[in-house]
Length: 108
Image 1 (tube, rainbow, N blue to C red):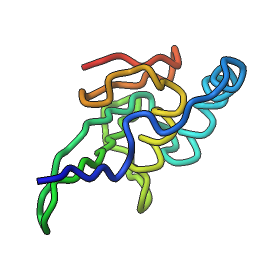
Image 2: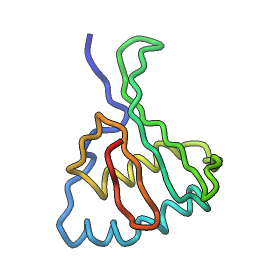
Image 3: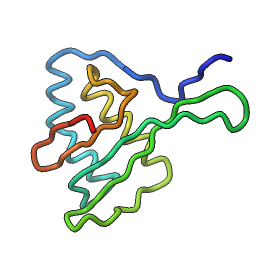
Image 4: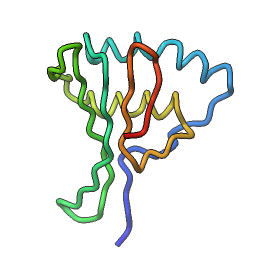
């Protein structure tokens, strides 16, 4: 059985300057997708509903009070792509939490 990945673990390699720019712009970009989110939890999920196993990412955004922030269609995929592009060395086979106050990513 082959494994198809909907989103690669390391979607792109960028120069150090571009990674710094992505990291600097990350809070603004994530705010466009999930307004008011102070933490975003990203977890890989393996599915095999219609055939080959596929890895997708589920993102949950929480506001300051711990309530869920509703994401638009495709929001989980966009959030995962932004975080993977900014933090390419993180182990994306594990869940991660992004913190808005410090603009850091921690492994859960």
